[in-house]
Length: 385
Figure 1 (cartoon, rainbow, N blue to C red):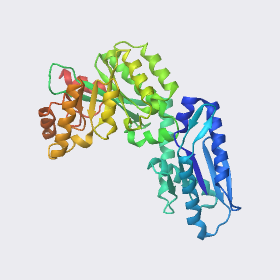
Figure 2: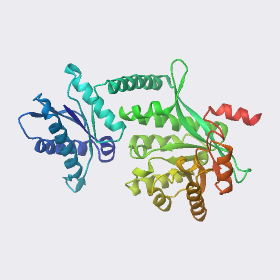
Figure 3: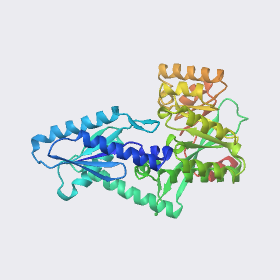
Figure 4: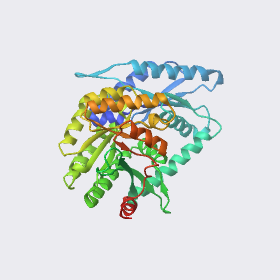
């Protein structure tokens, strides 16, 4: 059995609407019917953007043939152009495969699909050692914790300081980072639940919580803070409506900075550019996150109205002992100064790293040596002391 899932189809629906989304599903179904030949194969639409291919012949010798068939379908689907009215579309698919499990076969196949999504690969095969089943159970538990947190209003923002290191007269900024407070009071970091939120399509609720938490802190304490906004957030019309509507309910929006995430995925500059210009009309600043992690970042700084660039941790974490990292950061700082853009070094974890980035002219430093993420009240109490 194989489950095939159209990648990022929700984003497609958000942009083009459900009517065209349903057309795309119909075109995909017709494509799959043409691809799947032979008396041993059955095709099913199991809901939404997922299809299931079942091989009714249990001959184990056919397993490699079945894998090759699914791989060919994925390859052909990637190359296929779909047309509707004046529009042309292309999609990608991910797939999970399992060969056993009796009554659990569909669940095992779904676990394999989730594994493919998590590892950003096109195809995954269920592992009989039960590791995927264990991961699946952990994801179910995490999803329940998320739903409980939404009901209890238990998504909190912790704030990590961003310290000015060239001009001490400037104000320290803070990045708003999401945390989940469990029912027992334990604080859960984001890497334990963000992927689960995305897989279950409730990520937008996390973005909303971060926006509200951060604007409340800015309004109460008059301190500059930043929030992370991803490409999926920008492509989500409801999230954007919520964001711009709530800005009208808070003062001091000029103290807010939006950090753009997933910059490697920016394939539509107009959408991102229009978002940045609208954000700026509220007096909000723009930062590019993870700068230097890929070639695309350098085109972003030229094409988008950016106020800050956050230099990627991969360049900062070993800058005190890696000459190549030092040269790269020096080049980035020089470029930023010529473009009148300020720089922030991420992952400053030691005094040695802080000394180097200060020497190279980086404007701000952020990392555990500067300060760890904590409730804003703890940072403010420390400043009073």
